[in-house]
Amino acid sequence: MRTHAVVIALALAGCGGKKDEEAPLPPAPATPPVGSQGLPASSGVQLFVDDAAVATVNIAAVKDWPRLDSLLPEGARRLGKWQAIATKGAKTSELAKPFETYRDYVPALFPGEGGTINFGLFDPVELGKRGKPAVREDAITELRVKLDASGMRGGNDHGGGEVIDPAKVELVVKTAAGEKKLTGELLLGLPREPMPGGGGDAKGWRLDTILTAAGVTSYEKIMLYDAGGTTLPIEKKDVDASTIPFIKLNRQGSLRFRLYKKQGDGFQDAGDLRSLTRIDVLK
Image (tube, rainbow, N blue to C red; front, side, top):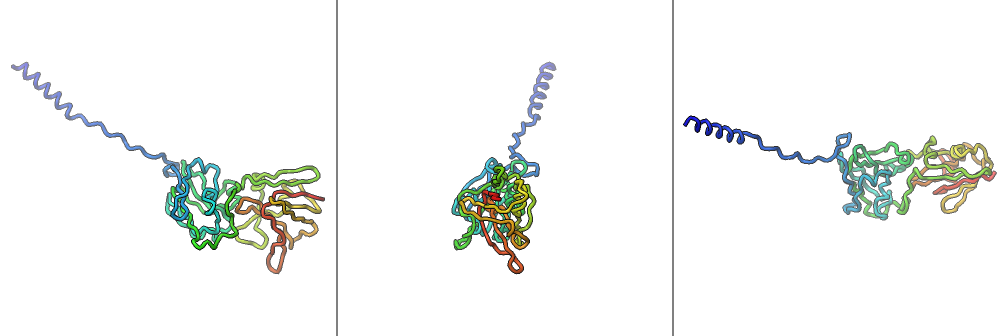
């Protein structure tokens, strides 16, 4: 009898041990990858024009810092018609009348840290250099462009078609010794100065700065050409402190040439090429 009692006691002790074992914990839920700023990596940015969804942009699509207007339907690309840019992401933000406040800037998407997507307004040269935006919103997941409902604005803005990457702009300078191509990398690295007479944040280069970069230190007469074949002659004897040939990178990603002449306290246009592509040194 004593032997049977011991066996029963051991059996009961064994049963009690199984009941005291803890049940296995369920697996932890998966978490999205996190960037170095503590923000989740982006699965894409949904783009809207007014209330209509028009595109979803993933991180691979922003590796080359695309212009935002190039990602929208052609009818929504005139920057002057944009009444507001609203974003959701690390925070919610809305910028009203962006291109009245930032007249010479362009909108772009660019990669952030840890796989996020950022939005910025850039000086065109800064965009070409992959530099610092004047306005920035990080880790966005949604962006809305609100258009002017009247349709009366934006007549002088880029109206669709190709948007040129500023880093890919080129200018050919032809002399008796041959041609020299000034690449975007070289041009964007040249120091700029404010345009004659001011004009907000607009900056560019005097013609002599561009010619010097091409190895031209003196000339008597040159001919400038734009992409459409329009020409404009410039004679050195006509260039002085009151007549300034000036080149800037415009919002379309083209080199805009203007000849400024002093009138009163300011400067007025005396010549204009909207997309300068070549300069011939005639003598």
